[in-house]
Image (cartoon, rainbow, N blue to C red; front, side, top):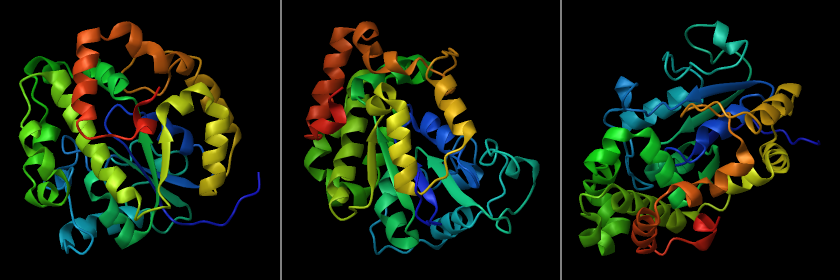
Length: 296
């Protein structure tokens, strides 16, 4: 595989339960990658509490947010949660890793709304993974029990409460975004709003790479080979091994990358109640989400 020289950091984003962990885990097997895991997870990183799912216009100034990203992309961020999944030799070291050679890989599920701003400021290679909204809903329902029972999705409220985001993108949907006390309806709204914003920003960011979870599942070897080549990542024997194991073993654990991947795209069709799937799709379709996001 011929590789181009590319030292830019890589930023993987997607909604929670969209496949970001599997994608980042495989990319973390590439030679010389420094993997920073969910730096804006507000439940584990104190500095993220004011910045998760933050929306910024391209010309906005936010020194604190900018400083955090500078710290991450330079490899200087020293946080046990964020560094917990680094590969050898980086996982053997404490403190600032910026002095070590290697390419920074960041995986985050709470950066979709600031993605254009991040791209303009730091020019990372951006990879956005999408997943069918019903598959996402099925995974959320099985992972986030309290959220499913309450019907309240905090992340949706986070979007609604940002006036600039509403003014720039979501004001036509203001009434419907107030939602109902129904988990599947609200998840469809959250999915639709996120992908509506990403689609609008996609035109001005042609270098963003969009990849569907379903395509990774159906032909993982080819999909990952194409992605590695596009990003100038060095394929290793560990890459082959992880792809083989992660697509043939089902760990049964919510946050494990080990799945029988070929079965994943169809699972929701057999497990999610038809009425719940219809709620998700009806809410998602309010935003005219492109068909390539939702076709399985």
